[in-house]
Image (tube, rainbow, N blue to C red; front, side, top):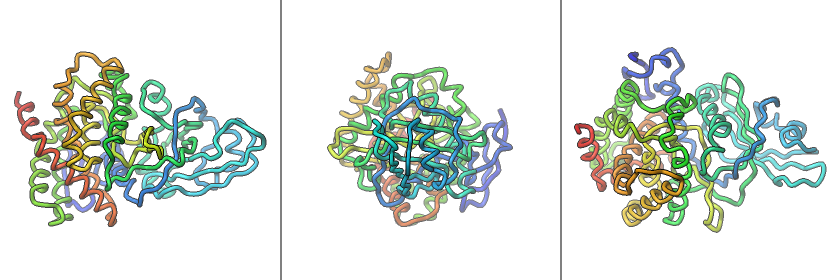
Length: 418
C-alpha cells in the first residue's frame, strides 16, 4: 500500500504525506485526507462559551424513510409527527450552542394529545455552511453508523435517540434526541472534578470492554481514523511534525519552552507510537474529553455525546487523552492511579480477560501521546479565537506535563526498539 498525499495544512507551506491509497483521490480537509477530518474539526467544536446541551439515552426508532431536514425550517410539526409516530400540532425551534461541524437545536413540540414523550427534544443537523457540510461528511457518517450499528452493542451511557438518518452523500444528516436539560456540558478549560472523572472512566470502560479486541473493528469502514498500518502511521507522523511546527510558531512564548521541547520530541515518535501494541484494540471515541460529556446537576450520572471522531486503536489512548486534557495536573497526579485501576476493574466487569492492571497502567502512560497528536493537528487547522487558543494552550500544557511526569517518551522509545 503505497501512495503519497500532497496537500497543505492551513498555515503550512507544503507537506508530502504517505497514507492509504484508496483515499488518494478523495477530498482533503485542512491538508488531511478526509478520514482524519474529525481529529481537526471536532477538536474545535467546543471552543464557544460553555452551554447547556441536552442529549440522553438510546432508542430503536431509527427509520431512514423520512425526508431529511436540511435546515431548522424543515423541522416542522408534520415532519416531527412522522418521526415520533404521534400527532404534533406545533413546534418551537431554537439554536443550542454554536458548534462548528454541525447545527444543534432545542425543539419544543406541542403534542396533539397526551403522550409519554419528552416535553423537549434536541435535533442535530449537518452544518448550515455548505462548505463545512461537505468537508465533514465522513463525521456525519461516523455518528450515524455509531448509533445504527454500535450503540446497542456497548455499554457507554448515551442519549435516547428517536431518529437518525443520513443521505447517500453524507452531507445531509439528522439526529433526534430527548432533551436532557438541566444536564450541563463539561468545561474544558476549568477541567473536571475527581468524581466526574470516575464517572468518565467507568463510562469509557463501557465503550471499550464489551467488544475488546473484536476483529470486526478491523473492518469497520465508518471510523474516520482506522487502525493504523505503516503507511497511515508514516503519513500522520509527517502531519504531526508539520502541525507541531505551526503550533509552536503561532503560539510563540505563550507555549513555555519545556512544552515546546516535549512537542518536538513527541512529533518524532508519532509514527512508531501508532504501531505499538497492535494486538490490543477497540473502538475509540476519538475525542474523549470533558467538553463531550454531560453531567446531571447532582453529579450522579454522565452521558457521552459527539460520536463523529471514531477511531480504532489502543483503548487506553481514550483514557490517557481524557486525563491529559480534562484534569488539572495536580488532580491528575493525585487521582490517576486510583482512577486507572477503576477503569481496569470496570473492563474486567465487562468481560475483558488476560489484561493485568500493570499492563493497563503501562498502556495509560503510553496513550498520553494522543494529547499532542490531536491537539497540534486541531490547533494548526482551526480558526483562531480567543477561547479556542486558551483551550488549546490549556490542553497542550496539561498533556505535555503528563507526558514528562509519566516518562512516556522513554516508554515509547523502549517499546519501539524491543
